[in-house]
Image 1 (spheres, rainbow, N blue to C red):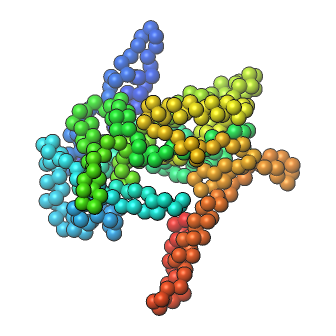
Image 2 (image 1 turned 90 degrees about the vertical axis):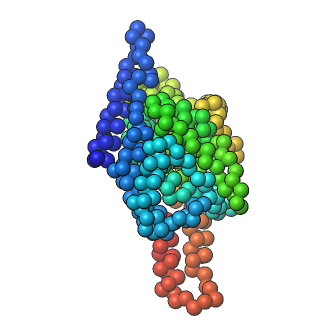
Image 3 (image 1 turned 60 degrees about the horizontal axis):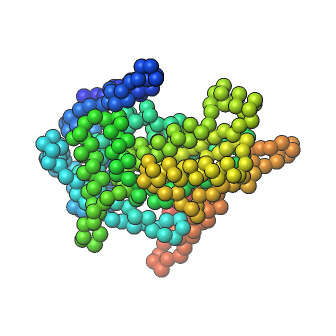
Amino acid sequence: MNIEEVQRRLWEQSQAHKQHRESGTPLFPTDPYGGRIRNLMDLIHNPTWIAAACDRVLKRSRGKAAGVDGVRAYEFEKAREHRLEELRLELKRGTYRPQPLRRVEIPKANGKMRQLGIPCLRDKIVQEAIRMALEPIFEVEFHDSSFGFRPNRSAHHAVHCCLLSAQQGFTWVIEGDVKSCFDEISHEAILRCVREKVMDNKFLDLINHLLRAGVEIEGVVHPTVKGVPQGGVVSPLLANIVLNKLDWFLHSKGSYGNKANQRQNYHGLPNVRFARYADDWCVLLTRCNKRRAERLRDEIRGFLRKFCGLELSSEKTRITHVRDGFDFLGFNISVGVGRSGKLVRKLKVGQKAITNIRSRLDAVLQYRPRQESISVRLGRASAVIRGW
């Protein structure tokens, strides 16, 4: 089996389904569920497919924390063929059940703790196999203004998108922050969105089992009734699938191409642009006042609550003017007066990002009681700077 060829065919089939769904008219309505992808479960337990997923997971997991079973990458590789065949047969027979996640807490930039859920290696392999199948299917549906956890896209592309909008005259900015997106996202919303493209009950049940695997805290397993684990392989993709609904909702608030030029030049009506990186997003508006921006923010809050089971953070969601600057993904974007007297866009590293990198450098460069040469400490600091 050629993995890339199968993914290309999945993409083409998904594209055909999208075109069929959008071809309906009032006189000739079409079935939006016709042409969905079938028999994905047969792909998941295919020996070549799951072996490719295993290779990717083991490559990324070397030196990483283990799940509740304590099995690390080098231990899994010792009995790889036996473990992988056992996992494949469980998937084929329908007896596979994921193990609970291991709870790990890491510090956040604001001083709070971020709760991660670390799956076992065998569960990571299953999640990678699911991701490999779902990614080409939903890449067809994703909006161009979505940049997080997608092939050939990065945070810098999202920042550049906002920078261009600021240069094109968009004035008011809604800095959006979803409250605990990965922890609060609705399981029902995830399955409903996947079901729109996939018609395979066994595959959907597999995703449902992964979502409800539970989390182990101090030896006690707690059920998970909502959210996706931060640390799961397929979690970013599932979150993107649900938040894609928000992208197209915001898309409907603006106009594009020739219609955008006519709307701005002749009617003076407001327009909307946005950029989203996972659960971080910002919306830019033009030819409107702050009251209209507040109205759109309230519409976004209602949409997220109804279709995604999410809430906007009241203290972190702000409305600012582009001349005052706004922060997005560690950068500060603003429009100011240049030397020639014209308005120019400005991009700076955000003050919060600078404070964080300084504190990290202080931690790795500080003197320790044990004997360490300056070259060792400089090597650690260089690694921090390269990562930053």
